[in-house]
Image 1: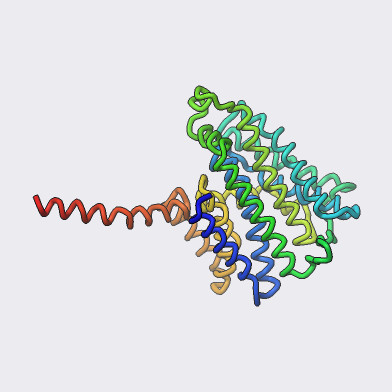
Image 2: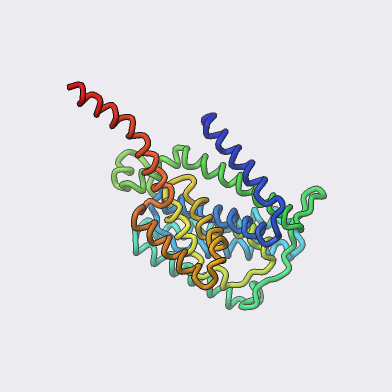
Length: 324
């Protein structure tokens, strides 16, 4: 990590530390939701943006993580144990879900993950003895660390922020590691990647497993954040919402999931002053962005930067032409 990147990261963390100060509990809750969905979107960005594997099941992994954490904490165990169990369970299940990706690709794979999302939803709704069925689970306690209670909304925000920073660092390490380069090679051309010695089978499975584990961590955060979960919170519409975060932010960019989650979670709050029109305005802004910048906000930012970088070169060429 370069000094410039480290400095930028420290400034960003400082802004996030200061963001909730003086805000209401609702605003802090929105910020917690943004960080939580950013973690889930990081996982989908790894699977879709870097490895090129289409998945419509990210919300189901959040649900699995949330229910596992809830069952563990309601049984009287600490949240850390529940969080680790959620990450482990989603990693293993994601590994199994990755096997169809070895045989089907693109929209066919999307249908497979769509079916998985539906199966998880039906299991959560019908297994009432374990999941509470349509009534869900309620009363999940917020964790306590060496006397530091996270029941106050501000305290819980800083716990979520710490987990977000850890997740972002792990995500950065993965995409800059040999695994990250293998993921990109798989996305660009799987046949060429295999001819260069990349084990595409193992990389495909890892892409699903690691991406699912990020969603499991988001689910472990969601359980104590809302303290009530039910199957409807993890239906297909929520998987599509996470997909929108990745696409709007910029698939295949490190900061893409964070920007996309901000657009999906925070931007509607700023548009509420328009009352009944805010959803129409929000949808119109997203459509315009996708039309003019299919690579999302990060791609749009790169276009603007490239324009400023080209100006000196254009001026030099004009000066040389004038001299001739």
